Length: 226
Ligand code: PRP
Image (cartoon, rainbow, N blue to C red; front, side, top):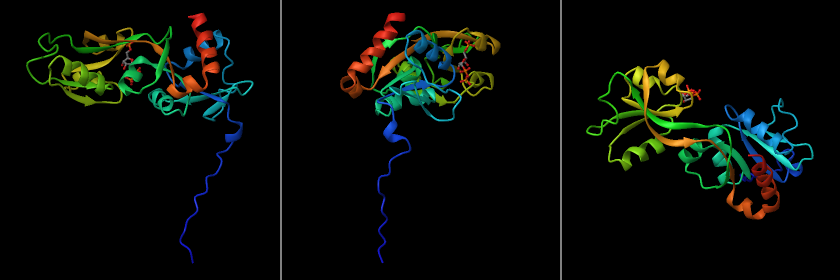
């Protein structure tokens, strides 16, 4: 009797009919403007957005759109699971993923900033001691304070970072600021901008060479409208 288990590679469903180019789009905040950009650029977008399928073809099956969590877009593109993607510069820099960045896109504008309680003017950047910083961006935060010789204790949260100072968990936060409404509502003020953020078109490095005709076509169409 053989104990061998055969793991024959099976074709994934629809693998053969998969479009030649995969384009990762972020769900959430940047989703509507990403789709609008494709439309304005005359690129055929996903045909059935209401479908639960995660890879949605365009009309002539030349592009498959991968509807992804924003934080996964740089990973999908670096590893070539998607050839092209749209994400925020904040997510891209935090990820440290290595991809081509041929175009900055005209939406998703905000900034990554250090903020702190407005009634504690002594706390800003508290360089002398070890400030506690709550953030969704531990890598960029650590880098910002390390470059300034501050030994910060970075506390990772996955959302509503403003809670840090409000609940006494942290002295400061590093978070995205768009209108400033969330900071004001929680008694916080912006202290320093770390990164100006906007959406960015990213391309897998190998695909940039191997699928250059199709990818350059996309870049030129988008460039023409921005
Ligand atoms: C983002 C960010 C701030 C807020 C800033 O949060 O983290 O909390 O928006 O926007 P404002 O300056 O216009 O007020 P998001 O809504 O993405 O939710 P999250 O904090 O749960 O991630």
